[in-house]
Amino acid sequence: MSLLIASTSLFTVSAKGANSSVTLSCVTFSWPDTIYRPLSGGTVVFNLTYKNNCTYDVLSAKYILIDKFGSSVASDAFIGLKAGVTANQSQSWMEFLLARGTEPFALRFSVEHFGSFGISNPAPVSVPFKFTERTAVLPSPIPTVTITATPAPAPTVTITATPAPAPTVYMANPADQSLTEMVKTLTNVVKSQTSQLSTLNAKLKKICAAKPKPKGC
Image (spheres, rainbow, N blue to C red):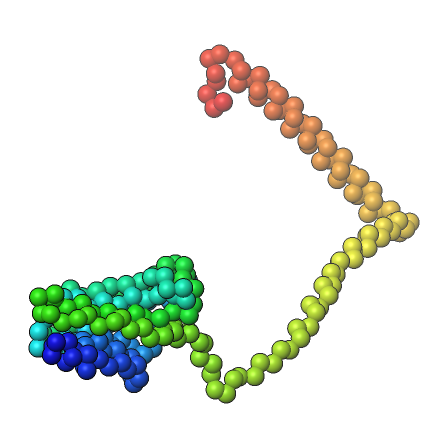
């Protein structure tokens, strides 16, 4: 009976300070005061410290994250916590599992002693739990944004070149008739020479066609 009275008198609850904490019998649970809400499809790590201040071992120390209706969303336990030992435990809370629960959430802690010690187990204790929301950090002061209208693009101008005027043909005057006659004479000479060259080419082709082929063909 004296052991039962002693264990009851050690029961305290606290949830203040940089680290939130709860003490049951002589086991203290502590965790960070700030835990950010996990991103969609992601996880967040819940770090929990168990400290056994008892002079005897504890069978188990356990926590459960429960929702508004008392349904378990996440849980873990430390089994066989030795006397005077401080143990750390981390658990990843997955966003899709947390989404199954209905807020507000609460953390429920419990301690179980070895039956052979004759010590009654303390009643579980629950404390409110709320995620810290992620907020965007805005610069100070907030910069001013000025929007300037963009002018419409300048029209495209296509310049088409004007064709050169047709050459002017002047008729020769009587004084230039002698020059005209000269041009005609030269033209006739060229025609004559071209005709003779064609005749020679034809003769050469016949000569080279003979067999055996003459030398030089």
